[in-house]
Length: 195
Image (cartoon, rainbow, N blue to C red; front, side):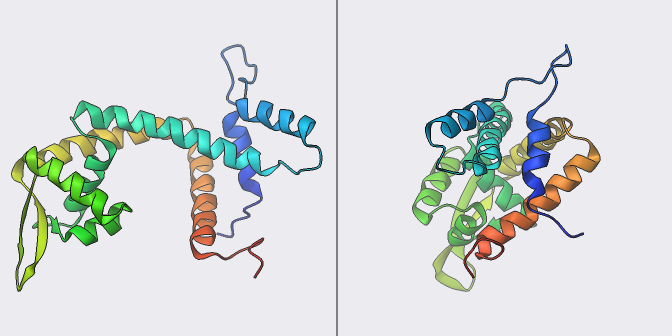
């Protein structure tokens, strides 16, 4: 499927303008911010705010909704990420700390703090890596596996609930657009990169 990145703005604008029970468009703070900037700085094209501003706002709202589930299980967002990365590794549910840091996109220092916290809670253990006495491995404990399985089940229910605001077609189109855009930003390619 060919994806037209320019249509991200149109899709997100439609999503942002959900209807109230009276059928009227809900107020959109991003449009107000854009209007104010257009008034104050007519020399600048503020069109990117329509997409970037809404994505930023949506990310903050979605993150808060996701964290509600994590907190119900006594976890923070980072704790959930570590346990999930270990669970996704498959049996025996272990990874090296550096590998965990790469899978959760945090520094090794931040990862050490997360592992310390999870180890104190009895959710992970550390041991020497097999075949390399210098290396360490972090593994889920049975309690950690039980907790992440429960938390992940609820997390997926929550994500389905959040996605239910979109039709299947809207969700598929948005996924394709975001996938293409993310790949271009991560790899520095695509229109507007000066290449």
